[in-house]
Amino acid sequence: MPLHQLSDYDVSSERGFLAAFDASIIPPPAPLKDARAMARSLPSHLLTGHVRRDLEHLATVDDASIDAIDDNAQLRCSLVDYSFMAQAYVWGEDSAPTQLPACIARPLWRLANRVGQPPILTYSQYVLDNWTRLDPKGAIDLENTATVQPFLGGEDEAWFILIHVAIEAQAAGLLSLLPTAVEAAAVRDQRALGRSLSGMIDAWDRMIAIFDRMPERCDPYIYFQRVRPWIHGWKDNPALPDGLVYDGVDAFHGKPKAFRGQTGSQSSIVPVMDAFLGVAHGHDPLRGYLDELHVYRPPGHRRFIDDVRASSQVRDAVQQLSDGSLTEAYNDCLDRLTKFRTRHLEYAASYIHKQSRGSDGNSTDVGTGGTPFMKYLKKHRDEARAHQL
Picture 1: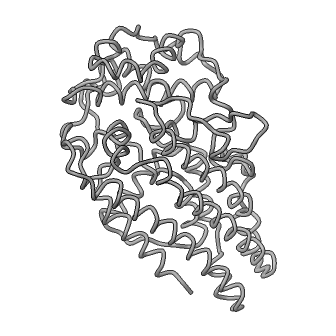
Picture 2: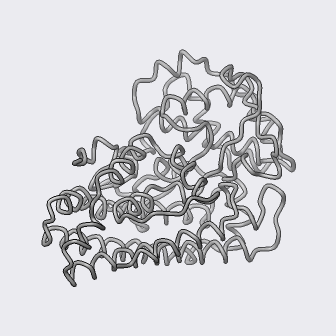
Picture 3: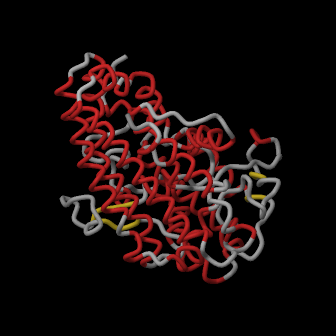
């Protein structure tokens, strides 16, 4: 089946999966102004050692006020506010709490429900909806972007987020070629498919070059001690073995809920390229984790990945056309996908696995998504590599 327009999936040829709006100029809805102010002041409150006391002073916004918000950008930016406050409440003091107070839990759940994602900080709120351009007319790159909402703030935290923003921006060039490539493969148009694959290789090279810059301003030790602790979730986390009670959320019936933490594996770039290139992963616990992460993505991005998987005949077309240059282009795309995964694996080793053992909530063995990340990353890297023709 043909793909819809990119815009139907909340994707664009200019920004890829990044938000179509500038988060820094989206005002909060009137009932959520105090929440926005508190979220923006988190760096100061976290340094007091009593952030929970401060957050508990927030008024609980009623469901009707959130349901009345009809602007998607306001919904998403407000979800950034509340998801950051939830993480600060859970991880901002020495031991993790057993419940999230209603003043945070209820608006968080309602906003997440409106947006179509779980009520926890996801990659969408941490990266896709959390950046701005210094020059509004300039490029979305490392020389012209800044974060909007931090935890502690500082160079290492901002650089970690902005590297991902810059990669997502470059991925737009790759995604813009995807519908044409899918159509070309379906009709076995060798020249059009070859041009699309060559363009994708160039985009991958730019993305990998940005990824290579992570160590420039994000130190592994600082990342592990001052950036990573805030983005953990409460599923498969030893510090919260039973999950977290969302106080005041009637839908949860007072029972604790466990959601996975923010992780780069929630980005849609690699999964959509797996789907496009026909990369299959074996059925095992790690594949189950990969499938589970799908619900943490924005609904439009999930549909895009699903539709690409259902419609792409690229691998079959390359095999059937049996042209040396086309096969080489396909393999080069797989090679870049493998290199990207390899770089992620290398950073996981140096930024996490090789650090001194952290606390129960910030383990060197378990990723922010709550999995044995080294095994997970290596397995899927190797499976992609094995698909070379």
